[in-house]
Amino acid sequence: MCFICAHFTQGQEMAHERNKDYLQIMNSIHFPCAASVDSHDYIFFLGDLNYRIDLENTKIRNLIRFKQYDQLLRHDQLLLNKKANIIFQGFQEGSINFAPTYKYDLN
Image 1: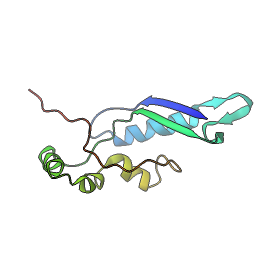
Image 2: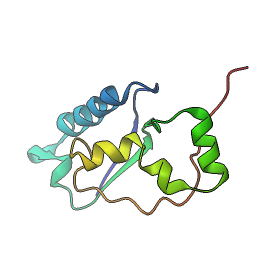
Image 3: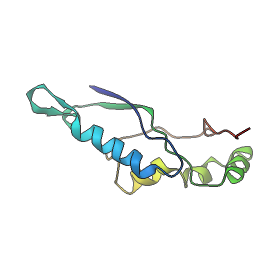
Image 4: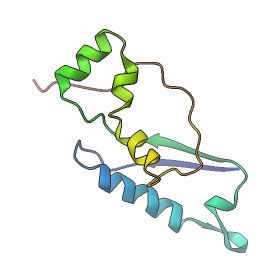
């Protein structure tokens, strides 16, 4: 088993940098006997990945209010990049049926 905990680049427009964070981690971690992350039977990737929802704040809040989480997931940067086979190929995630966990308003 391999457990990875990471904190990816923050910022709404930084999805490309977060993808680079992931790829750097996956390509640079090496274990004895030339083993890589991918050589493990089970890989758990945890942390603050910082992927965002590409929608306006008010739109996000309205979708949350009416529990339209499927609409939010269509704009989730992590899921979109995973679907495009850029990151997390072969990883599985449980169903997401809850509101986003972080959003703030300045002042």
